Length: 200
Image (cartoon, rainbow, N blue to C red; front, side):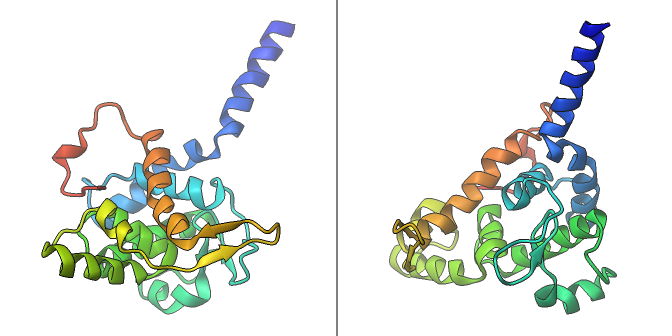
């Protein structure tokens, strides 16, 4: 009896320990609806893990970001209402909003690769300036992540504890984390080379 109780507690801990697993199918459906069935939706799950740990929370960022995808609804309200999302009070709405916002970010970034779209989601269009600078120097249209990063000129942030960190590091670490987290939710039988969506 004690052994059965231990196994039940252990299995419950595993499920609760990774909230993101519970959202995989919702993220898959939302991203397939918005992007098509060849979109690597597991990066959407990785993004939720990075943004909120897959928890429906209100951020302390001072701008009102909320939900599993940490969306600032007042910024995206008009856009999302056109997509039929009148609020982000439910996790389902938050995930659908995430997919629509990511599609818009993909359209706005100056790279066809997903790393750029995730950077726009996180920090706006400043990455496009870095891509333009790299294009001018190297005369290439598709600027790789590592080259765009070389042209990053963002401020140094000082934290309350006296530590300093480059805003470039924060910005360019964001897609790296999403890529790493996303691999945890990628199906084993998927070959990303068959997709028209390239991350790097």
